[in-house]
Image (tube, rainbow, N blue to C red):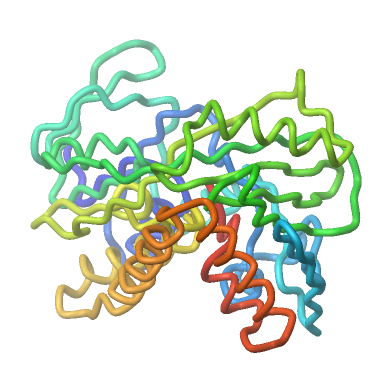
Length: 349
């Protein structure tokens, strides 16, 4: 079967790309390995500067004008007029984006596993177990951190960090960020209230600590705060921040497949959507700019520098975190500046 544009992966990046292409009259098929859209390791936080104003109000579970930020020795409460962060169910967001894409004319095929990619020829296993082959004029890899499209291009992904999230029943009022170097090294932990649940998790860049140790530390840290995570379902994923390009002739990479997540924060949803839309615009008009991706890469490079500084020693890492919180308390920097250094949802996903 031949199609104009074939997109592998129905996450935010793939769906954003597909919708924009279909709105411009292009034939688009999106293949998704999972039967259901949207489920992902994600704290579910979206920002006022990012997605809050772009999604329907009914999708928002909770919104917060106050943020509580903790280090080993300090605490600061940030208050703004508009919601700084809101929480959203990742599956709900995915289903909404899928509906938007299909209404624009996208063909979405779920439960279909890619088994082989040879250039722009893609072989898949259908839900019934049959083999099917797709060919396309343009191939877009939006298939996450372990992207098969990326591997088919011979591009390694070495810079990755583990993200861990528990979604447990409960109701809490405060949205918290924890720069606790004893528990998370130069990563961080979060407590994000949702409608009827609480997201409790942690993320750390590669080289910070192993995923198993991060999980162990998260469970102990949460227990000290009254959250018993033992026996609760844990979801974990690797976040790819090893960017090596997004455009390879008629083959493209977006979001985590391109390595556009932040190594420092694990932020993934917003870079995925922005890069997906940028790729769509480049396919529609090759002369369009890619300034949005260029800006994200510059930010990512800055985050790499912070990671390298934090990795020098535990003492230096702790000092750096304390300085960040102190500057926030003294209003030398605002929360959105700090947000560039710690943000789950713009977050682990």
